[in-house]
Image (cartoon, rainbow, N blue to C red; front, side):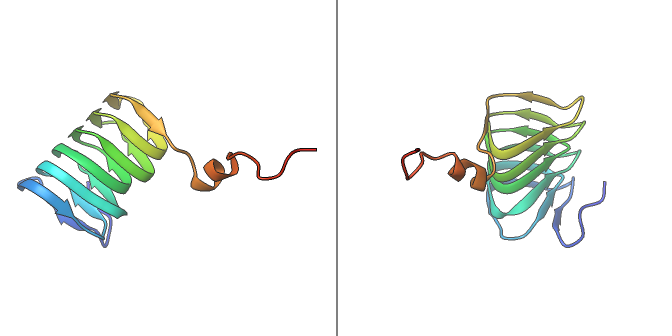
Length: 125
């Protein structure tokens, strides 16, 4: 699998423990244990990746394995080879056939849609 052009690539031979903060898209195909903060960016978890972390991202595409809770302001995509064990909170969720997931899911919906569902400010006639 080839990372998206313009994204930072962390290869399958790399092991990282700690906190990762970034403002650019990231392709992670190695071993990571800790916390990932990419609030304005997309994280792609490659097919060789073994992630044990809490993830805070804009968008997430998963081909590998994640153990931990995921918070995405945008979209989460679980591809065919994805394994996710943890709770998800996201605006949107896409799960391909054969992907596996164990945990709770909370979909917050599109922000404009959520705000339009608020109590009306004027009484109905």
